[in-house]
Length: 416
Ligand code: SR1
Ligand code: MG
Image (cartoon, rainbow, N blue to C red; front, side, top):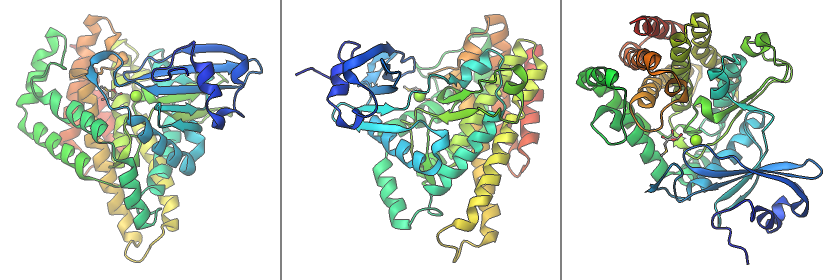
């Protein structure tokens, strides 16, 4: 009997053969290629293809952080990811990879191979913006959020979903890494020496730390919808095979465009704005890189994306509103206030997620791959933009105005 506790290139064929649910997906006896491609923080990932060209991805959670084996990590997160993938596929199949199989004994997900797509963060870092992706992701968050909230689900089903999706260990990682550690001395933190005064200024800002404390409580106590939980640009695949710079940078999607959110192992029933905020934060980070490289026009283009994301989310959510299952006390007058709350959450979570990627564990390649001379100003810009967003967002309905404020801050910080 082969041991599948930790899959290897020489055991995946036997593993496939042991999974009846995959028999129609790929010929385990005629594999043409097996590639181990996991480069994230947590998992083993294999892309397999058979001689006929059929292919799929196997993703197995490891019992520790892949990049730090001394940090244990529950393997049950793969079961949470299976719950999120299945629910999100039911709500918006166009924007997630298809789930083919889940094996709870070995913590293995079998999912659609999207290797004709590229990771959005890598594309942004290479100067290809794929601006159309923001609107697609606004639809994705709206559809999945509505369908998994009490607006789209029977109230008992919503409570059962909360129970099925609870993800204590990974929720706690987010609580620690996003909302706490950047604001205290902690071994996970590291910045360039030149940025140490910037971090000290953040920690000394009582108004900011108060906002982060409140945001952490929102994150810990809100059960609006089944969120992706880690929707940064490295968790998004984009494809625009038309490939021209115009097609890639235009807001209109090329005819063959595809946008998929993957890696939802941090998902749980939480605040809807957290997913929007994660994307928004990473737009600020990508813009900081562009600004640091002297590509001001590209930085400005990237900072149209928070507004595109929000506008698309709001339009889609409003279009779903008439289908809510119980309009008795959720009349139309509720919708504006509900959306305003999600928008405010998105902004404060964006601020938190921008700051954590500079100060704490799991940094962003956008900034880390800059030469130190440019990295210093880019990091400072992200920290200041995050701080300003946290403190000025209240009551500001205009996401474009908030993004314009971030752009102005990045420009000044990069020029120092
Ligand atoms: C130990 S996990 C570190 C980070 O990687 C994931 O992408 C999440 O953002 C998490 O915080
Ligand atoms: Mg991930």
